[in-house]
Each structure stands twice: as C-alpha cells, then as structure tokens.
Image 1 (cartoon, helix red, strand yellow):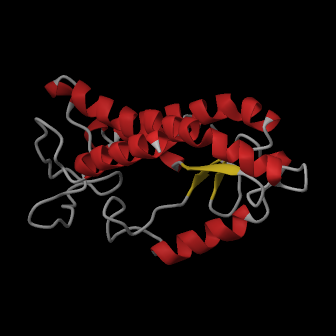
Image 2: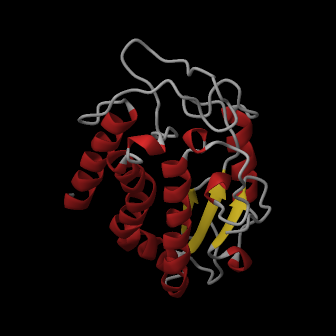
Length: 210
C-alpha cells in the first residue's frame, strides 16, 4: 500500500506539471519540432508544454530541464523500482523461462527524438525540444543499464517509440491517430523475446539507434 500511495502522489505531481501548474512556470507559444510558428491548441486553463524549451539567451531554463528529467528519466526508473516485486512475482509464476510480455515486462514509452545517433541540426535550438530530447536519451540509457538485472529476474525490458501521435503534445499535425499507434505497439509486443532485451524500437518493432 505504501508503494501504491507513493505512485499515486507521483502521478498527481506529474499531472500538475503537464497541466501547466508547475510553480513559477510561464506558458510559451513556441511550437514543437518541425512546427515553427505553429500555436498549440489549448483549453482556457492549460497548455501542454512538455516539448517546449526556453531560448538560450534566457539561461537555458534549468528549472524546465529538471522538470523534463523528473518526468521522463527519473519517473520511469522509479516506477520500475516500485513495481519490481510484482514484476518478479509475475515472472516466477510463469510456466516458461523465456522473456516475453505475457510473462513479465517493462515497456517504457520512449521517443525517436531521444536517439543521439539520429540527432540532426535541422531545427533551431528554440524549436528543438532540447529538454525533452535529452531527458528521453537519458531514460533510454537508464532502462538499458537495468536490462541485465531484469534479465536475471525473467523480466523483459524494452524502450518503444509510439511514433508522432495526435495527442495534446503531438498536436493535430501529427502523423498517427492514437488508435493506430496503440494497435501497432500491441501487435509488436506479442512478438518480443530475448533478442529484444534492452532494445530501443519503434511501434513496428524496427530498431532505433541509441
């Protein structure tokens, strides 16, 4: 119960961050990568700003960078830590010994923007979602580093990018409907095994370079 309570509290804090209630935060009208000048749709009381990054001339926004890290890097790591006893129990109860989603698994929702290898200079810094991309790259590394320990416990560990999806963060200009992205990920999850342990893949199971 204590673990569940901590998770709920963390979830509530994250919700406040995503709903633009972080202390001292000021909303920005800057768009997401590839959408220079695009103004996000927003309700009268909130705006999804998780992909926004302040200008370098403003000191690079240390507070905002920390929020990205708490949400995208520290958050997933702590969730795995809290659920580890249950993940181990699920793996131990399985009749098989091979890694799979049906046995026990950690599927961390990552992003192609977290790939260091494919990072380009196509976008100006103010539109490059620096905080988001750096924190996702760090999350990929964190999950990759715990993969050996999870393997010993019979737990599959995957980083998966859902694609550019039409959500509050992705915007209406995104390529995928939520239902299409989810359907593709579920189809891929059924095929995951030991060969994918610690991997960084897209929704169709294709590898993404770290």
